[in-house]
Length: 339
Ligand SMILES: NC(=O)c1ccc[n+]([C@@H]2O[C@H](COP(=O)([O-])OP(=O)(O)OC[C@H]3O[C@@H](n4cnc5c(N)ncnc54)[C@H](OP(=O)(O)O)[C@@H]3O)[C@@H](O)[C@H]2O)c1
Image (tube, rainbow, N blue to C red; front, top):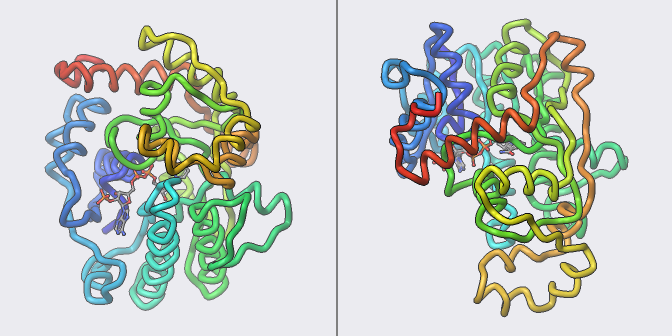
């Protein structure tokens, strides 16, 4: 049995689907308020046998703070894909991001060490590689102007994963760039993908992006090949937000984006609460977010490509597929018309 946490999320749902397609038994974690209908619908983007595969998933409610819930979820489980995390750059979610990221990983790891779990894959973020490059030691409860709670939570979680590896659990870490996927449009990181469409403003920095299908394939490959005690950056292409936004908006028939330079974002920062009353997005104008979107967060995937000989969808292919799905979702068309 395989356990996937965050299985209702953009990535977890695709890992779950791919495992089920391979004939594996998957227990997928959700919460009482999770939207399973969105998961089912989005499977139609990925396969013509969406309902058939969806119906094979065993769903379980998980509470990372409750031992009973963790041990029940891990019963008979040999492999874990830990995808759950609160993905948000909204300052109001800061504590929840840290709490969910760190506590869930710590409690899950402890339970796995106690249960007969053999393999554990942790989904971190490419943003952590930037911290490592600068040789900085991040700690909880410190206010970093350059790093969001999200990055701190991933950094500290990775340390726990390395420790668990030293203590005998077969762990592997993946560090994806910005994931482009279908479904979950109003939540999590999909909100960010949504912003390229709903807002004409974009940023001066750049990001490393990757298709959700590639992240899922790599994750499953690493576990199948028993590659542990390592971490792998997963990125298809490095791209300026301006270019990403232009491509997406062109596909939607929208005007070109307008770049907000760092200096402008900084000058608007003191007004963020007032501006936030007009447009909620202005609330995101805090130092760490401004730094993040104004820098070029560029990474490469040489290591994973050499190791498992994979190739990735280009940004153009990902945009065409997933934003095509987005358009279908928005216009309420039959979902698998896009396949
Ligand atoms: N998307 C990206 O661009 C990106 C890039 C790099 C790394 N990552 C990492 O990849 C992983 C998956 O990201 P994603 O884009 O799939 O995120 P997502 O779409 O926001 O999904 C997050 C998942 O985590 C679950 N979750 C959140 N808080 C939880 C809690 N307290 N207890 C239990 N479950 C909880 C959510 O469940 P509900 O459905 O109940 O909310 C959902 O299933 C995350 O670890 C993320 O940090 C993402």
